[in-house]
Structure formats: structure tokens, C-alpha cells
Image (cartoon, rainbow, N blue to C red; front, side):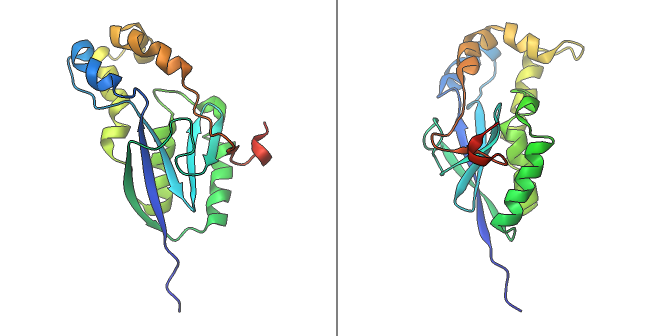
Length: 184
């Protein structure tokens, strides 16, 4: 019996604030943040990510964000490209439709974590997945408050709002997974 083919799985990590969070968070939050993370999974020679347009793919480093700030080796997978694309298509029709995107609660990091576990059985680093709840709990300590509204009304939220509102991560020449040629 032949050993299975193994395909490397990488997590691309981007700081959406481009260093702004690192500089302003101690003043505005009283706590140091290293960045505001966008992540994607690179496997089978493509980069896959989730945003308000659904699940998309492009060549590695091919989003408008450019090259990643760091690359994490998640492990290896035996999942073939064909099976992986079928899996992504089903995710894109269910829990990762574009309209399900929520910057604070169901975002690119949720997607990357889900896909990393499917491919390798491993989660992405907790400093990434825990960041939204960590920030919101710092700004909004009372659980009955709407965390998202509280954050956006905070000084830090107001400083980042124009940046967060303007971010559209769409790969030049890329396509939406599960829809031919990126069509809706």
C-alpha cells in the first residue's frame, strides 16, 4: 500500500490595521494589541478566505492586502484538492455565505479555524480567534450590552471605523468558490 500524498497547509496572517492597533491600543484600550487579524488558508497552491462576498480564492498573497505579515505552518493534509473544493462549496452554501459574514463574530478567522480543523485537525492560534471577544470585553464589560455597538461607539472603535468600513478583501483576478467565474 502506497503512503498517502500529504499537502502542506499554511495560515496567512495579515494585520488589517497596518500597525495602527499596535500604536493606539495602549492609549485607547489600556491594553496592548499586536494587530487586527485577517487570516486565510493556503493549500493546493491557492489562498482561500471568507469575507462579505463569501468564500473566495486567489493565488497566495494575491489579495489587495499583498503579502502576509506572517505565515503559520498548520500542518499537512491528506485531503485532495477535489474533495477540498467540494467541502468549500458546501460551506459556501451553508454557514459561510456572504450574508453570514460578521466582522466581530463570524469572520475570516472563524472560516480559517474551521478549514484548518477540517484539513489537519488543528485549530489556528488562539491569539487570533480570541481577539474580538478580548477587545469587546475590555470595552464592554457588562454582558447585556451589545458588544458590537459598544465597540463602535468607543474611542478606539471610532478611530478604526473608517478603516474597518473601507476594507474589502477581494482578490484581483480571483474568484468566489462555488460560483463559476465569481458570479453571484
